[in-house]
Length: 204
Figure (tube, rainbow, N blue to C red):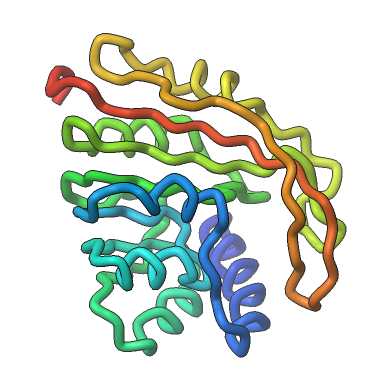
């Protein structure tokens, strides 16, 4: 089995197990996107669809992508006005210009040039648009990512190597929150939050 097939199988198995639950929005995204005027949004690695559904309910035009066909099918079956696409971001990127790109816990145990994907996402923003990257800063007890060393927000920003004439770093910080796992268990976890805003048309 090649790497893309292994990745698809891994994420399909995970989201098939969680399909019965009700997806909820990631709280960091709700905090950041809540005050924004709705426009076009791209949800990278949409997973169970909680973020896409929350955004659509608030008037955003949502494109949601994931490598997992199970995740995409589940989102489509909810019948909401969301464009849900099965896409391997290691190989492709959705076409379009966006006012918001959301990358919530966009981690994988499989090979992925994450910096390239996020750099492409930043370049897809309209002027004034934001790239919101919320990463794990620590692993919850129920996570597959035990033992992983996660980059800080400033390290992620440095990897993107974006021209400050075109993009500004509006937020780069870490914060704790109380998280609930798929089995109802709870733990205090650390989030890394990076918000990049496009301030110029340059670089298109």
